[in-house]
Amino acid sequence: MLYYFVIVIHIIASLVLILVILMQAGRGSGLSEMFGANSTQTIFGTSASNFLMKATAVCAVLFIFTCMTLAVLSSNRSRSLMESSRALSTEPVNNEKEPVSAQPE
Image (cartoon, one colour):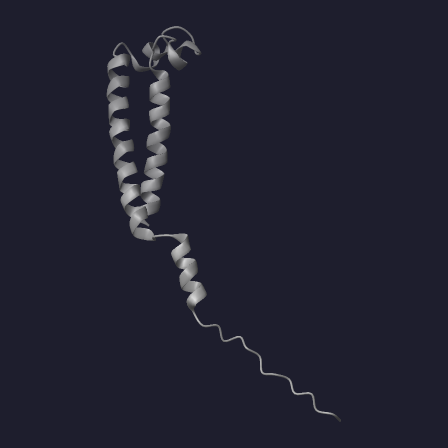
């Protein structure tokens, strides 16, 4: 249950991180240029660059934290698919059918 919760948080953090990075005005003005000049300033006010920088830092820390958590949780879940298939193949199989004797009538 915790594993799936962390996966959902990880996906949300990565999508928000992508959007926040694209909203920042860089050399090419990022995604903000697509919507018109200074659209990030009209959406977030005059402190748009401050907000976007802080949001990027928070999302990046959350992304790294969920990456590390998922790595630890997945290492505890199971070791390998090959180990589980070996365990299944070493179990004795009792599917032997009794031989049918052919008796003449």
